[in-house]
Amino acid sequence: MKIKTFWYFTKEASTGLARNGLMSLTAVITITLALIILGSFYIVVTNVNHFTEMAKGVLEIRVYLKEDADAVSLQNRMLSFDGVKEVKFVSKTEAANWLGKTLGIKELHNYLAADNPLPDMINIRLEDNVELKELTARLESLPGIDEVEYGKDFVESMLLVIQVIWVIGVSLVVIVGLVVLYIIVNTIRLTVFARRKEIEIMKLVGATDWFIRWPFMLEGIMLGMGGAILATIIISKGYHLLIAYVKELAPFIPLLSEHMVNGGLFWLVSLVGLAFGAIGSLMSIKKFLKV
Amino acid sequence: MIGVIWVIQFQGVSKIYSNGVAALHDINIHIEKGEFAFLVGPSGAGKSTFMKLIIRKELPTSGQVLVGHKNLAKMKAGEVSLLRRNIGFIFQDFKLLPHKTVFENVSFALEVIEASKKDINRQVPAVLELVGLKDKANIFPSELSGGEQQRVSLARAIVNRPHLLLADEPTGNLDPETSWGLMDLLLEINKRGTTVIMSTHNKNIVDKLRRRVIALDSGRMIRDEQKGGYGFEN
Ligand SMILES: Nc1ncnc2c1ncn2[C@@H]1O[C@H](COP(=O)(O)OP(=O)(O)O)[C@@H](O)[C@H]1O
Ligand SMILES: [Mg+2]
Image 1 (tube, rainbow over the protein chains, first blue to last red):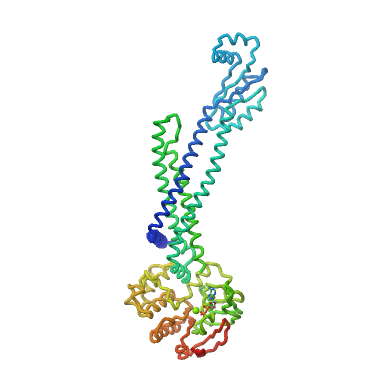
Image 2: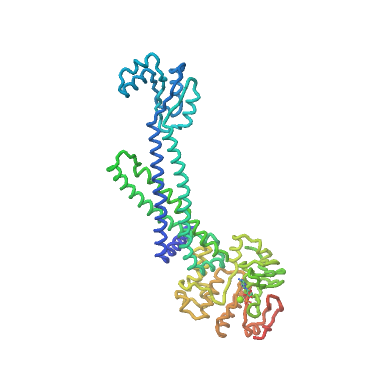
């Protein structure tokens, strides 16, 4: 594309925006609102993700051993597994002591000493990036293992939450995308309609369809990007305030810092704004190119 | 399109619009490069449809329209753009852009096909000079008379030096004297080698100039004669 042509397109697109000033403004504001919903959801998702990752890190797996298990070789093999940070052997005597202490019955181990029903066990501390399902499956397949226990309920409900979040996320992208599309189509249609005579003449003197499309597409992209930039600014300012507020009231809730979400946030809303802005413009002009 | 000989051929062309109106019926015709042809016939005879088929604004329902031996129905979008760059078109209602000056209306036709600034600055003044509007380059169409507006429209149509000029009732909104002024220009352009096809109701002009006359009535070609007259009662 020639530089001159590029400037021509930009000039035409800006003229289009200015001509429908109020409509363009309304469009940008509505797109901003739609993208704010999407962007806020993104913040929730990244935080939930972060939280589950952290939760995994403090998780422990308890592996109960059978009577005849070879605890030492088991510990060595476990240490070689991905996601395992530390292993610690807890004998059944230690377990009985701990239980006695916890229950306040000092002599419990004496009672149990003769016939301690508790199993030996190995406590496993996990790495942050552990694949829990995979690891427990591997542990269960080792010889001499009676039972593998971990915060299953917690992990499973977390997984469910993540699934639900995915469904909501995809639906949101679709819905917000459609809203943006609808607004762009209707805004650009005004410009296209105002310039239908020019388009007709352009077609007749032999301008290519892409030459005619570009200014309208740029206009749509400018509207979409305008909304995306505003939405990013508003969300990140809002999130900034939220972080300060939470720090004060509930410091134990681990929120991600702003700079960890801003980049992804901007990309997401820009991509949606840009893509649907461009598609919407193309849809508006399609009919008028059939000359 | 370079090197193509600009012969226009209609081979058994019929056009039925989507609303069922039969605008043209079994038209066979051959127009050579450099000819000047009048297209005559009452309103609704199919004259505009005939022109629209040549610039491929419409496609025939049956039969073929060939320009330079190329079947227009088989052209891709890019080829249609190239075809149109070689055809000038003027209309009864001028189709000028009201918010652009005379100069801008003409340069527009070059800008949108990405002509260089150099070409624009050379060709636009030259063509405005030819149509006698050099002094009015910077005013808006609304400040011009009908005849002047049509000359702007003509300037826009020929600024890219087309092989073919289609004029659809170009004198329809002009008084007799202004009409003759426009005819002089069209004849001059034809003399320089451009094929001109002009539809008209103007009996006076057709009868005086004695050029090829193609007569349409209700979508049928009823006459095609060299040095013909208007033939219809006006
Ligand atoms: N786009 C169109 N859709 C439907 N009918 C049309 C269209 N254009 C022209 N017609 C019809 O086709 C016939 C021929 O029209 P036209 O070619 O404009 O004739 P002319 O230019 O000789 O007056 C008329 O009956 C007209 O109503
Ligand atoms: Mg007509």
